[in-house]
Image 1: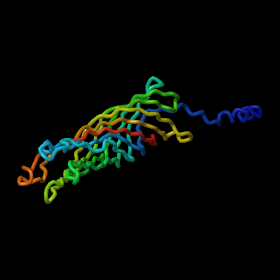
Image 2: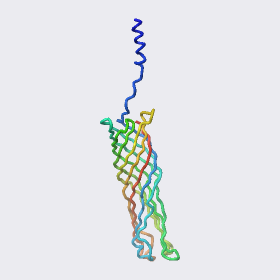
Image 3: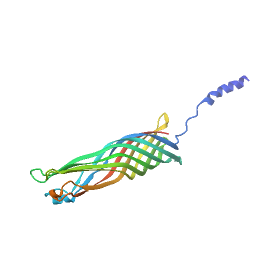
Image 4: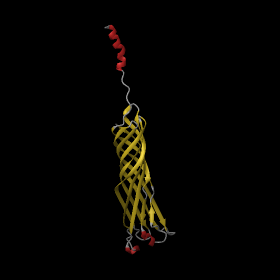
Amino acid sequence: MGAAVGALVAIDPAMAQTPAPGPWNWTGFYGGLNVGWSWGNGAVTYNEPAFAALPAGLPTSISGPKFLDGAIGGVQIGYNWQFNTNWVAGLEADFQWASEVANGSFSFATDAEGHGIQGSLGSQILWFGTVRGRVGWLYTPDILVYATGGLAYGKVDVSGAVTTNFFFPNPTWNFNQSAINTGWTVGGGVEGVVQNMPRVTWKVEYLYVDLGSISGGGLDTITLLQAGGPHPYTFSAHFTDNILRVGLSWH
């Protein structure tokens, strides 16, 4: 009897040991937060053919600043499937608040007295989101390198103001137009498990986003008596963006 008890005591520490955790499994739902920076192109082009009939030297097409940038932040949700040990596929959706703005002014004089036109052109990305597929390879069981691509959507805005000083009073006209556009996105990133926090992952991700174009038109406020007005004008802008962000997700 004593020998049996001694044997049990001897093997008890081995029985009490906690089994070593298995490799991280990526299958399942997740959600989290992200922050980052974005830079892109949202140049507004203003066209008014009637300027060709006004005093010499006025351009009929004027472009605003191309570069728009700003901070972004948002949320993401998704689902992963791990298969064949080293591969992960999934779906992810995100929504981003943005502060991306491009504003600039212009001035064109046609004589020594400074007669001409002046004004401003601007564009914005107010918010955007994506719905993407992801496919990745496990560099280690805890680190995923992936490519991603899919649908993009967002709210974009263009605005402008134009003034001529050939006439009295000097006519000024303004335009502003917003739209919710759809487009596409492609990119990639790295995601890894946070040490000692097996349900949390970090990621570093880059996306290229194309949100399409916005366009419109109107009539200037030059009168018929001044110069045969009002005259029609058009404006347009095409929005592309580069996104670099970091994030945390809870699985």
